[in-house]
Amino acid sequence: MWDRGLHSFKMVYTTLKQKCHLLGRIPAHVKFEVIKVLPDGSYLSKIYPDRQSKKKGAQPIQIRVIEYKIIEDGVEKVYRLITDLFDVAMFPALLLAKEYHCRWEAENTLDELKTHLNGRKTLIRSKNPREVIQEIYGWLLAHYCLRVMMFRAAETAKMPPLQLGFTGTLKVIRRAIPLFQQAKSEQINLFYSWFIAEILDNKIPARTGRVNPRVVKKPRSKFKSAKVFHRGHGTQLQQLNFQIGRAA
Image 1 (tube, rainbow, N blue to C red):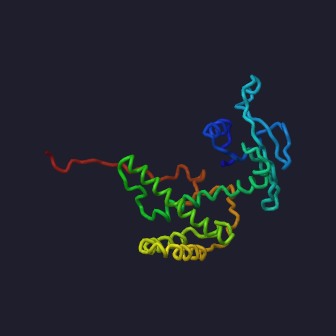
Image 2 (spheres, helix red, strand yellow):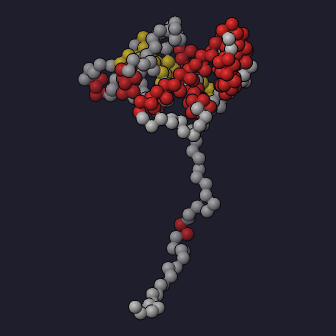
């Protein structure tokens, strides 16, 4: 996923070359030719590297364009997304539009990894490249296991996993590890039920929509702004006289 300022033909080409799917917003000045309208209102189109390549018959990339409107502060704004997900039944336009506006959830994942799960100033302790890679793999696997347990707990309660707090679940797991290490085989199921119930106690309220207005912060200073009449009124240079106090 990317914002409209990052769109380019090279970005689309590189993403597809890596065998990844894409969902990105398009600037207003980019125009698309409607090739085929799909049942959900989106349509198929093509993109080219540039106009000259299009005239010369360059090979285009087929994409799917999704257009929708959102009312922000009483003003109606048009959003346009492109994707390579052509299955309308599995990926309807409304679903992709909702998922695009949840892309900032990735920042929460970075916060979970760097701040809460690691919990130390030195993120990577190893000095050799091989051990660094091994430590990163362990770091990511620990986060994956924690999120899997949150998903299983939410599945038993038939609720979205995003309604469970990450930091609370992490505290539960840290308390549960010694108990599981000392538990007998016949006690595992009992401890697991307790473990799931403890995770479900860490419910968080629904998250509000995230809005970042496009504004610029003004630099603040304790001094007044420089004006034209301030020029030529600086401190006069002092004449310095050097005298030898004692001859060598």
